[in-house]
Length: 365
Image 1 (cartoon, rainbow, N blue to C red):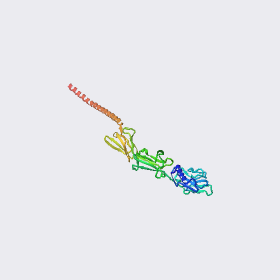
Image 2: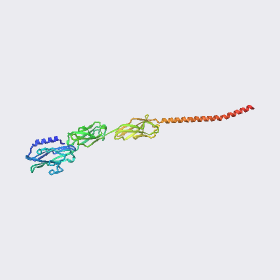
Image 3: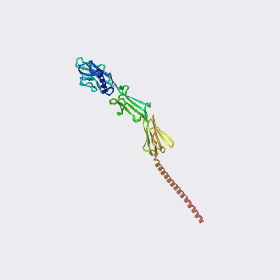
Image 4: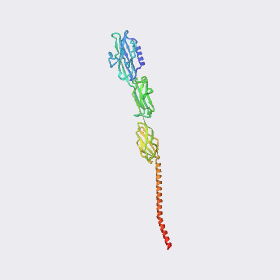
């Protein structure tokens, strides 16, 4: 890619080789120029003409148009000039620099550019028909995962490189890297020795001198096993018998958790009770109390939560009710026994009176 500095160097070298003045009609170009889409570029140009000629008009054309009759992308004789194409040659038309600056560069303006000039003499018309060919390229990116995984996993070593094919085999361009649109690094490469989920995002590179040059998006998606696995309980870990209780297992993972498992820990036994993210007790019983934990799993591993303990608090009112009922039964039983004894006593009293009468009768006789 050619900058204004590169253009000046090229022009000075030609002037030294060819001499400032020439007696022939001639236009000299850099045969090919390369530029990145979105940048600006200078097409270097020098032109010569015989002594005594005075330049009246200069014109630039694209190969898609007639280089003699136009329309021209730049025409000093026209008042309507495109802001994209700027003539940066000698402002006085007696000079020799005929360079053209293009900003911004797009793919649809690639191709051959031809310079033409007209002097005040009747035969003073010349076009450098060999022209200069502009090649327009995009910045290219490549991603290398040195760990050899198909997907990028937490802990992998990852290298992302930006390339400007105008540089050829040398990395002479100065680059900047952006993450989600924010500048984060200068240089041709980004390297993570131990990549983490926080490095996930959309990355692009640009030429430092031309922020409008943007590569395609490199999407870095760092996968990892379950993290921060935890249990939440609604409404509370202290539960009324017969009430509704929900335990929810949550975890952060990429890709998302594929399977949740619930376990009840009873002494030395661990019993699996459910394979969903939520564990429901629609009518909580005394036997359901105890310690629970969940496990979250994806393709990169598993993680267990800490244990939660469900305590039963609602069985105490039932004991009071049972005790009250038992007391009532005891009272009823006591009353029944008392009534029965009373009846038995009454049944014995007439018998005693009859015996007394018999004794009285015997004494009379």
